[in-house]
Amino acid sequence: MRRFFAKFKFFGIVFFFLSVIILYLFYQALKPKETLPIYQPSMVNPELVDSTLQYKRKYHAIADFSLINQNGKTITQKDYEDKIYIADFFFTTCPTICPIMTKNMADIQNRIHNDTLVKLLSHTVTPEIDSVARLKKYAIEKGVDDNKWNLVTGDKKQIYELARKSYLAVQSDGDGGPYDMIHTENFILVDKEKRIRGFYDGTNAEEVDRLMADLQILRATYQE
Image (tube, rainbow, N blue to C red; front, side, top):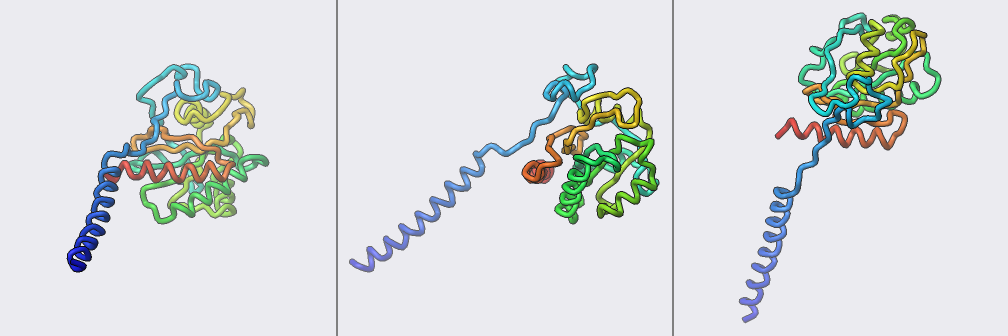
């Protein structure tokens, strides 16, 4: 009799653990997968969006561009083809938020160092000041990895249009002065299809952690 109950107890334990595993697998299969929004101009603060796009509700994507990086190389969308990337706007002489943003972007660079799917892209908002030589000096000082992170300069009009019409990242078109574009502290997460998937305060460590978590969610959508 004792042997019978001992066997029953053993099978009961096995059945219990199998049930737990099966229920867990069912839960994982039925649980909605985490996804990120696809940001359209109509979803963003109108102050950050060009007036011609404020009511656009679909099909928004980053426009093609041609800019020059810290090594004097022309950087285009081809360099980010089939990549997820994180973009921002800065200038090398900025005494306020830019040093913090650059430090946090450097931290992201270290965290994605071995991730071949992800790159970084920083646009200067004062291209008339931030020459290739100045960007190179800044890149060396900040520990920029040329293989992961491009600091770009170029035609001011093109950069401003990218900021206002593509990345939805600045508060003013400017009036032509050297510091006329009021850039935000935003880091912008862009997917392989050149769509915006998130905005994050690049001066806030918790926001950077949120970006990294969202990056993994986005990354997972390309591994299914």
